[in-house]
Length: 223
DNA sequence: CAGAGCGGCTATTTTACCTCA
DNA sequence: GATGAGGTAAAATAGCCGCTC
View 1 (cartoon, rainbow, N blue to C red):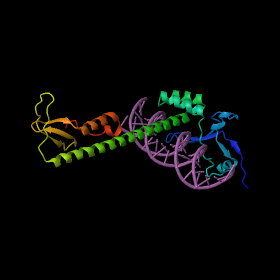
View 2 (view 1 turned 90 degrees about the vertical axis):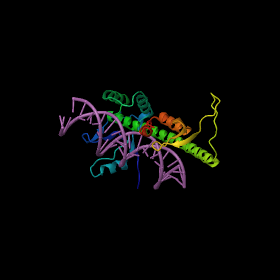
View 3 (view 1 turned 90 degrees about the horizontal axis):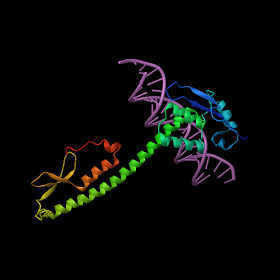
View 4 (view 1 turned 120 degrees about the horizontal axis):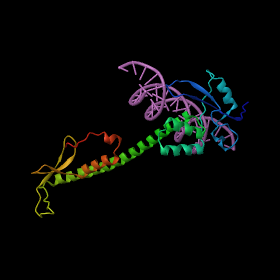
Protein backbone atom coordinates (compact mmCIF):
# COMPACT_ATOMS: atom_id res chain seq x y z
CA UNK A 1 0.00 0.00 0.00
CA UNK A 2 1.33 3.33 -0.99
CA UNK A 3 0.33 6.41 0.84
CA UNK A 4 2.15 9.58 1.26
CA UNK A 5 1.55 12.97 2.65
CA UNK A 6 3.68 16.01 2.49
CA UNK A 7 5.46 17.80 5.19
CA UNK A 8 7.57 20.86 5.27
CA UNK A 9 11.26 20.39 5.63
CA UNK A 10 13.16 23.14 7.32
CA UNK A 11 16.48 21.42 7.43
CA UNK A 12 19.07 22.08 4.77
CA UNK A 13 22.19 20.13 4.13
CA UNK A 14 25.23 21.65 2.57
CA UNK A 15 28.94 21.24 2.45
CA UNK A 16 31.44 23.95 2.96
CA UNK A 17 33.24 24.99 -0.14
CA UNK A 18 35.17 22.39 -2.08
CA UNK A 19 38.67 21.80 -0.83
CA UNK A 20 38.51 24.29 2.02
CA UNK A 21 37.75 22.19 5.01
CA UNK A 22 35.32 19.74 3.51
CA UNK A 23 32.73 19.02 6.09
CA UNK A 24 29.11 18.10 5.65
CA UNK A 25 27.00 20.28 7.82
CA UNK A 26 23.53 19.51 8.90
CA UNK A 27 22.13 22.95 9.16
CA UNK A 28 19.07 23.14 11.33
CA UNK A 29 16.70 26.04 10.94
CA UNK A 30 19.19 28.30 9.27
CA UNK A 31 16.60 29.80 7.00
CA UNK A 32 13.41 31.38 8.13
CA UNK A 33 10.98 29.20 9.94
CA UNK A 34 8.08 28.26 7.72
CA UNK A 35 4.87 29.65 9.04
CA UNK A 36 2.37 28.58 6.44
CA UNK A 37 2.53 31.89 4.59
CA UNK A 38 3.18 32.64 0.92
CA UNK A 39 6.89 32.40 1.49
CA UNK A 40 6.57 28.70 2.05
CA UNK A 41 7.20 28.33 -1.69
CA UNK A 42 10.88 28.09 -0.98
CA UNK A 43 10.57 25.23 1.42
CA UNK A 44 11.01 21.90 -0.14
CA UNK A 45 8.36 19.34 0.41
CA UNK A 46 9.31 15.75 0.87
CA UNK A 47 7.18 12.71 1.30
CA UNK A 48 7.31 10.58 4.39
CA UNK A 49 8.74 7.82 2.22
CA UNK A 50 11.61 10.05 1.18
CA UNK A 51 12.27 10.83 4.78
CA UNK A 52 12.37 7.16 5.63
CA UNK A 53 14.60 6.43 2.69
CA UNK A 54 16.99 9.13 3.72
CA UNK A 55 17.30 7.62 7.13
CA UNK A 56 18.17 4.32 5.51
CA UNK A 57 21.09 5.74 3.58
CA UNK A 58 24.44 4.10 4.01
CA UNK A 59 26.06 7.00 5.82
CA UNK A 60 22.87 8.16 7.43
CA UNK A 61 23.21 11.30 5.30
CA UNK A 62 19.94 12.28 3.71
CA UNK A 63 19.92 13.48 0.10
CA UNK A 64 20.49 17.20 -0.16
CA UNK A 65 17.49 19.38 -0.62
CA UNK A 66 17.55 22.13 -3.14
CA UNK A 67 16.42 25.52 -2.02
CA UNK A 68 14.08 27.38 -4.31
CA UNK A 69 14.52 31.09 -4.03
CA UNK A 70 11.41 33.21 -3.74
CA UNK A 71 10.68 35.84 -6.36
CA UNK A 72 11.61 38.56 -3.90
CA UNK A 73 14.92 36.88 -3.10
CA UNK A 74 15.70 36.49 -6.79
CA UNK A 75 14.75 40.09 -7.46
CA UNK A 76 17.05 41.39 -4.72
CA UNK A 77 19.90 39.16 -5.84
CA UNK A 78 19.50 40.32 -9.45
CA UNK A 79 19.41 43.93 -8.33
CA UNK A 80 22.55 43.42 -6.31
CA UNK A 81 24.21 41.64 -9.22
CA UNK A 82 23.47 44.56 -11.52
CA UNK A 83 25.30 46.85 -9.13
CA UNK A 84 28.22 44.52 -8.59
CA UNK A 85 29.14 41.16 -10.09
CA UNK A 86 31.20 40.20 -7.07
CA UNK A 87 30.66 40.71 -3.36
CA UNK A 88 33.14 41.35 -0.62
CA UNK A 89 32.63 39.41 2.61
CA UNK A 90 30.74 42.26 4.29
CA UNK A 91 28.40 42.73 1.37
CA UNK A 92 27.83 39.01 1.21
CA UNK A 93 27.02 38.86 4.89
CA UNK A 94 24.67 41.82 4.68
CA UNK A 95 22.85 40.49 1.65
CA UNK A 96 22.53 37.06 3.22
CA UNK A 97 21.07 38.64 6.33
CA UNK A 98 18.65 40.69 4.28
CA UNK A 99 17.54 37.67 2.27
CA UNK A 100 17.55 35.35 5.27
CA UNK A 101 19.92 33.02 3.47
CA UNK A 102 23.33 31.66 4.37
CA UNK A 103 26.29 33.67 3.06
CA UNK A 104 27.40 30.52 1.25
CA UNK A 105 24.11 30.41 -0.64
CA UNK A 106 24.55 34.03 -1.70
CA UNK A 107 28.09 33.24 -2.77
CA UNK A 108 26.96 30.24 -4.82
CA UNK A 109 24.19 32.25 -6.40
CA UNK A 110 26.65 34.93 -7.52
CA UNK A 111 29.03 32.31 -8.82
CA UNK A 112 26.33 30.64 -10.88
CA UNK A 113 24.99 33.99 -12.00
CA UNK A 114 28.42 35.02 -13.27
CA UNK A 115 28.68 31.74 -15.11
CA UNK A 116 25.26 32.26 -16.71
CA UNK A 117 26.24 35.77 -17.73
CA UNK A 118 29.40 34.57 -19.32
CA UNK A 119 27.62 31.78 -21.15
CA UNK A 120 25.08 34.22 -22.53
CA UNK A 121 27.84 36.56 -23.66
CA UNK A 122 29.69 33.70 -25.35
CA UNK A 123 26.53 32.60 -27.14
CA UNK A 124 25.97 36.12 -28.41
CA UNK A 125 29.54 36.35 -29.64
CA UNK A 126 29.17 33.00 -31.33
CA UNK A 127 26.03 34.16 -33.18
CA UNK A 128 27.74 37.36 -34.18
CA UNK A 129 30.77 35.53 -35.54
CA UNK A 130 28.56 33.09 -37.42
CA UNK A 131 26.84 35.99 -39.18
CA UNK A 132 30.19 37.57 -39.99
CA UNK A 133 31.44 34.30 -41.34
CA UNK A 134 28.41 34.06 -43.58
CA UNK A 135 28.84 37.54 -44.94
CA UNK A 136 32.58 37.09 -45.47
CA UNK A 137 31.98 33.82 -47.29
CA UNK A 138 29.53 35.56 -49.57
CA UNK A 139 31.95 38.42 -50.14
CA UNK A 140 34.72 35.97 -50.90
CA UNK A 141 32.52 34.24 -53.47
CA UNK A 142 31.76 37.55 -55.17
CA UNK A 143 35.40 38.54 -55.29
CA UNK A 144 36.44 35.19 -56.68
CA UNK A 145 33.80 35.50 -59.36
CA UNK A 146 35.12 38.94 -60.11
CA UNK A 147 38.69 37.63 -60.42
CA UNK A 148 37.55 34.88 -62.74
CA UNK A 149 35.66 37.34 -64.88
CA UNK A 150 38.70 39.54 -65.15
CA UNK A 151 40.89 36.59 -66.07
CA UNK A 152 38.38 35.42 -68.64
CA UNK A 153 38.41 38.75 -70.34
CA UNK A 154 42.08 38.27 -71.22
CA UNK A 155 42.37 41.85 -72.30
CA UNK A 156 44.60 44.63 -71.11
CA UNK A 157 43.81 46.21 -67.80
CA UNK A 158 40.92 48.67 -67.89
CA UNK A 159 41.84 52.29 -68.16
CA UNK A 160 40.76 54.22 -65.11
CA UNK A 161 40.45 57.95 -65.39
CA UNK A 162 41.67 59.97 -62.44
CA UNK A 163 38.91 62.17 -61.04
CA UNK A 164 41.52 64.80 -60.24
CA UNK A 165 43.67 65.08 -63.32
CA UNK A 166 41.26 63.50 -65.80
CA UNK A 167 44.32 61.56 -67.01
CA UNK A 168 44.40 57.74 -67.34
CA UNK A 169 45.73 56.09 -64.16
CA UNK A 170 48.56 53.52 -64.36
CA UNK A 171 47.55 49.92 -64.79
CA UNK A 172 47.19 47.83 -61.64
CA UNK A 173 46.87 44.21 -60.64
CA UNK A 174 45.55 42.12 -57.74
CA UNK A 175 48.14 40.49 -55.54
CA UNK A 176 47.87 38.44 -52.39
CA UNK A 177 50.23 38.75 -49.47
CA UNK A 178 51.51 35.23 -48.70
CA UNK A 179 51.83 36.02 -44.98
CA UNK A 180 48.52 37.57 -44.10
CA UNK A 181 46.58 36.47 -47.20
CA UNK A 182 45.30 39.95 -47.78
CA UNK A 183 44.49 40.99 -51.31
CA UNK A 184 45.89 44.31 -52.35
CA UNK A 185 45.59 46.36 -55.48
CA UNK A 186 49.09 47.13 -56.68
CA UNK A 187 49.93 49.72 -59.28
CA UNK A 188 52.44 48.27 -61.68
CA UNK A 189 54.88 51.07 -61.14
CA UNK A 190 54.23 51.55 -57.39
CA UNK A 191 53.83 49.51 -54.22
CA UNK A 192 50.56 48.32 -52.67
CA UNK A 193 48.20 51.26 -52.58
CA UNK A 194 44.90 50.40 -51.02
CA UNK A 195 42.81 47.80 -49.23
CA UNK A 196 40.07 45.88 -50.94
CA UNK A 197 36.60 45.54 -49.52
CA UNK A 198 37.51 42.18 -47.98
CA UNK A 199 40.50 43.61 -46.16
CA UNK A 200 38.46 46.53 -44.95
CA UNK A 201 35.75 44.19 -43.69
CA UNK A 202 38.20 41.99 -41.82
CA UNK A 203 39.72 45.01 -40.15
CA UNK A 204 36.30 46.29 -39.16
CA UNK A 205 35.38 42.88 -37.76
CA UNK A 206 38.33 42.71 -35.43
CA UNK A 207 37.70 46.21 -34.17
CA UNK A 208 33.95 45.63 -33.73
CA UNK A 209 34.01 42.36 -31.86
CA UNK A 210 37.10 43.28 -29.90
CA UNK A 211 36.99 40.22 -27.67
CA UNK A 212 38.24 36.69 -27.18
CA UNK A 213 39.24 34.77 -30.29
CA UNK A 214 39.59 37.70 -32.59
CA UNK A 215 41.81 39.59 -30.22
CA UNK A 216 44.19 36.72 -30.03
CA UNK A 217 44.76 36.65 -33.76
CA UNK A 218 48.28 37.58 -34.75
CA UNK A 219 48.55 41.07 -36.05
CA UNK A 220 49.46 41.46 -39.68
CA UNK A 221 50.11 45.14 -39.39
CA UNK A 222 53.64 44.55 -40.65
CA UNK A 223 52.17 43.65 -44.02
C1' DC B 1 60.58 30.11 -0.72
C1' DA B 2 56.84 26.99 1.16
C1' DG B 3 52.47 26.63 2.59
C1' DA B 4 47.99 27.92 4.50
C1' DG B 5 43.80 30.51 3.65
C1' DC B 6 40.67 32.38 0.60
C1' DG B 7 37.97 33.76 -3.49
C1' DG B 8 36.94 32.97 -8.34
C1' DC B 9 36.27 29.82 -12.04
C1' DT B 10 34.90 25.61 -14.51
C1' DA B 11 32.93 21.18 -14.81
C1' DT B 12 29.80 18.26 -12.97
C1' DT B 13 26.08 16.48 -10.10
C1' DT B 14 21.70 16.83 -8.11
C1' DT B 15 17.16 18.43 -7.57
C1' DA B 16 12.76 20.63 -8.74
C1' DC B 17 9.77 21.46 -12.17
C1' DC B 18 7.78 21.39 -16.77
C1' DT B 19 6.05 19.22 -21.05
C1' DC B 20 4.28 15.65 -23.54
C1' DA B 21 2.85 11.15 -24.90
C1' DG C 1 -6.92 13.17 -14.77
C1' DA C 2 -2.83 10.33 -13.39
C1' DT C 3 1.68 8.88 -14.55
C1' DG C 4 6.28 8.20 -16.12
C1' DA C 5 10.08 9.63 -19.28
C1' DG C 6 12.81 13.17 -20.96
C1' DG C 7 14.40 17.81 -20.92
C1' DT C 8 15.78 22.03 -18.65
C1' DA C 9 17.09 25.55 -15.20
C1' DA C 10 19.43 26.40 -11.39
C1' DA C 11 21.26 25.24 -6.70
C1' DA C 12 25.01 22.87 -4.92
C1' DT C 13 29.51 20.36 -4.93
C1' DA C 14 34.36 19.30 -6.15
C1' DG C 15 38.59 20.59 -7.37
C1' DC C 16 41.93 23.60 -9.62
C1' DC C 17 44.29 28.04 -9.87
C1' DG C 18 46.08 32.48 -8.57
C1' DC C 19 46.77 35.75 -5.06
C1' DT C 20 48.06 37.35 -0.49
C1' DC C 21 50.17 37.03 3.84
